[in-house]
Each structure stands twice: as C-alpha cells, then as structure tokens.
Image (tube, rainbow, N blue to C red; front, side, top):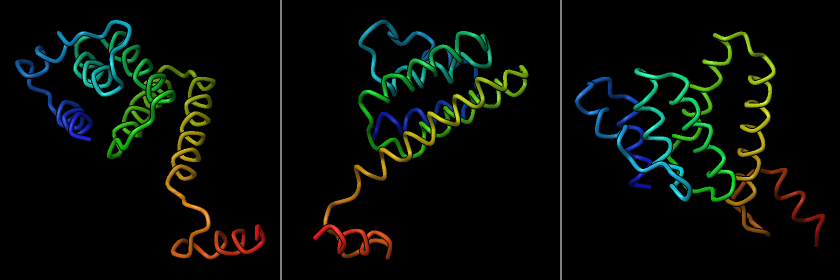
Length: 131
C-alpha cells in the first residue's frame, strides 16, 4: 500500500525536479504496477503518449496481480479515459469503462467472505439460499 501512496503523491505533483526522478524508474518487463503508474504519471506532463503507455501497462499488471491501491488504479483509469475523450477515441473510453467495471467486480468478490453476516441484505439472502 505504501508504493501506491507514493503513486498518489506523484500524480498530484507538477514540480519538474520531482517528476524527473520518477521518469528514471526502471519500467522494463517485471516492473510492478505502482512503479509503472508512478512513471506514467511523471511522464504525462512531458510526453503524454509515453505516460499513457506506462499507465496502460500498470493497469495490465494490476489485472494480473491486484492489490489494495487506495484508489490509485481508479485515478489511472480516469486519466486514460480523459485522454481518450480528448482524442475522440470513444471505443477506447468504452473499453476502459469495461475494464474498470470488471476490476471493481473482482475486488468486491475478493473482499467478501462466504457466508457473511455483516454485509448488505442481498448478500445475506444469497447466503441463505446457498445453504
């Protein structure tokens, strides 16, 4: 979670001297989603295409290895969606929305424990129906 907190700081920083260091991160194969996201956010003000590519790579790694990201994956989706909207690439916007919904669904499922008695009523009804 600490790495994702750093990503949030990078995303909200526009000081060139800070971003320059994050642009030097190792983003070759095997890089983690937070490293790719931090580098992507750092590159966006200077090279939008490179920054977007790194954010897409971060989302791909997160798809394979999801983690508690404190909302930073959503921020990456949001930035990519905004870039696609500005470019008029509505197919990419739709694809990103589908990916975002799929991730939300997976994360909800992963956080549930069956049978549970503390979550919403529909879950309790489904649990009762299962037994």
